[in-house]
Amino acid sequence: MSDNENDKFDEFNEDEEEIIKKREEREKRKKIFLIAVGVVIGILILLGLVTFILSAIDNYNKSKTRNKEEKILKQTNIFPEADYDYNIFDDEEYMLRDRGVWFSDGVSKTVMTDANLKTYPVEAQFMYNVIDLIINGDYEEYNKIFTEDYIKKAGNDFREQFTMQKLFEIELEYIDHGQLSDNTDYWDIQLTYRIKDNNGTFRSDLEFNDEGARPVIYSLISDKEGLKVSNLLTKGQYNSGAYNN
Image (tube, rainbow, N blue to C red; front, side):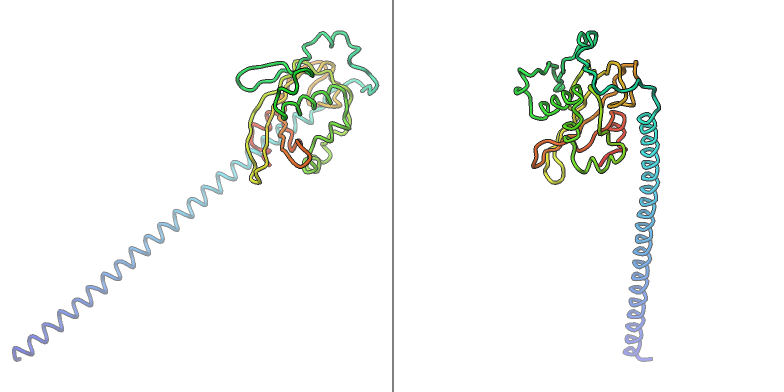
């Protein structure tokens, strides 16, 4: 074989080796890519599985909390027959109780009265009037404070009628304030009180002679008609997060 032929043969072998080398590199890169894709898919599946499990656990815990809270709210207490004509202000013992409405802004506590009412924020004024409606048994006006959505959601649990209520040791406290997704302002205000001689027409979850306080959270929103109550939860329901809208 001549030198020229040898040179051509060597060049051919070099080209063949280069092609084989490039092919192997492509196969190697392809395998690495497929492995990487497999790892990513595996991670996504694992994350999805973990998310599903956590979601299922969260839903279970929320369902358990709802059942517990609803059991408390629907517990059977023995109440005296309600007298819708009875004037609670004739009860001298009740009139000696602390019937003032205390307002807490998180820093200090002050007593709200008819005389200084206008010095408080509108949402506090609103709640002061709500308390007055409860005490006076004005269920017709009280039922107007709720949004239509809340009334529909409450269904048969919506309490339409109640007598005058002997509230005392009353306190209002800010829990949360902010804006909803549609830029509507909201306020979550905690109302705490005790009821003397509870007859169950307004709070069936409190016993007659217990006088225990079970705080409730009124969620207020501003709409075209002014302030409305969009949700009403016990403190246990509110803190659980199981009743979020």
